[in-house]
Amino acid sequence: MSGDYHGSRLTQDQRRASTWRALWRFHFRQHIRPEHTVLDLGSGYADFINAVSAARRIAVDIWPGLADHVAPDVQAIIVPVTDLSAIADQSVDYAFASNLFEHLTQEELVTVLAQLRRKLRPGGQLGILQPNYRYAFREYWDDYTHRTAYSHISLPDLLRANDWTVTAIVPRFLPLTIKSRLPTWDWLIGLYLRLPFKPMGKQMFVSASPPSCP
Image (cartoon, rainbow, N blue to C red):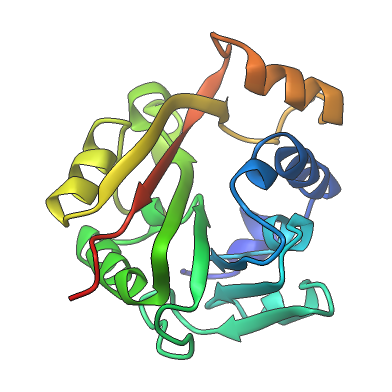
């Protein structure tokens, strides 16, 4: 990314950590078991992976500052997400990418998917949380590092075109950003996730499983 992205656009915010703790409590712990190995792609401040309870946790980011933010038992790997060679094949049960793939070119995303196909165990899952261009088009390009736009239609189609099986699509999963005056109380996030219609929901959630390894 160009310039000091973490010092300008993505500054540290304790509300982000509390949001991820609530998301773990109300959503992700239903999909991740205690014996799992979890891989967090584009970890940033490691808020997601630090909130996860699993046997092994791996955080990957090109940002060197990641190492200062991971919990003591989280393995930090400072590399581009297009290079997962440091991770053993068929060793990951759940891979997750939050607000990452819009920062990559489509060719880079396809490279990541090809590598994840090898890293995930049979039955493994990839969870993707990111802005849904269908609902966030007004703000989408305000982030100067965004390179590719995806919607809840185009992203699943790209996954299917690369032989992945899409297992879940939630077009409106969360609001676009925590940069607002809205509170991030646990109970409020839990309530929001249960709403049949989510006001201000501009981030989507997509889950997919890889094709079988040859």
